[in-house]
Length: 383
Image 1 (cartoon, one colour):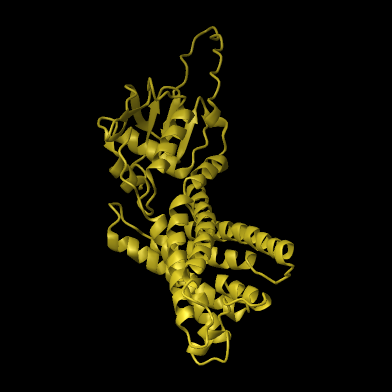
Image 2 (cartoon, one colour; image 1 turned 135 degrees about the horizontal axis):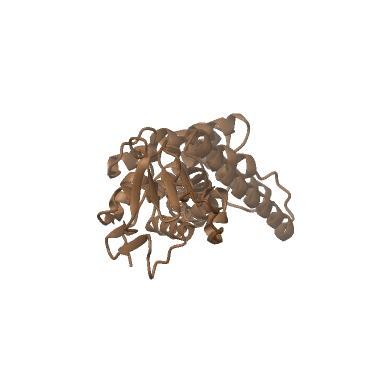
């Protein structure tokens, strides 16, 4: 959202909102508010003479990304808490049922942002100091903590999207494996691999989605770098956890000690996904996100994730399929070995080319699932 034009600022009650300096001040003290929540408050104040529809709020405040209704609800709760407002008896922000929100404080003063703040009246005798009202809890809450709350709202969409992509990839891969010449696997391998793919996608999508949500809320400047770093951190965190759990589980249950990856792969794929989301939404104009733009974001994210997956192959690192193949080779009598897939493309077994193709398939599938899951907005009515 573009900030309010001109050099004006808004004074209401004990608060001053400066769009030019992007500051909310309460009784002379700066109040931390993450950028999108600041934009939400500014929009409501600018349009205070009318109720602003939630769709317009999304299109202005979250123009470059699609988020769920819960993200808007959390933003309004945080802004209300910061202002010391009460949703049941609103002093500042009123909920308009099944529509949106309205800023209802009656005495908003617009003034030049370069003018000095209003001073108390000068008298010969100093006025007794009035006690400063205690700041509400959210005022003392750091912007980082607010960003962490925003991240907690961003995992479900990417998790579900990546899970569906993982289920599809695992199921299709299982069917191809069962039909490959020389394979001992039956068609029953397809639902097994679909479950594995779905679980891996859900965990990875949740981690990367939360990382992107945190980065997006915390940083409006250097957004590309922030989203790349946020995706890498979230993906790496989940990857390390899955890597440790898988290796520990194999060692404890069946006595296998295998070099299963996860951490580095999560960092690379997560970072590439964040880069794809950032590149696909650079300069997104205000207005409703069209279906073709969501597809564009998903495709760009898929391309970046797929290229990152190819880079991992060059470094000798494989994704879920590589781990499945390693476990199958080490487990006596397993039919999940992927050597027949390599034979389909002319390799004697599961070699570099087949590994590269599967990595590309997994990486691109994860990216497109993450993109579609991240860029969706339920239209649930407000209550």
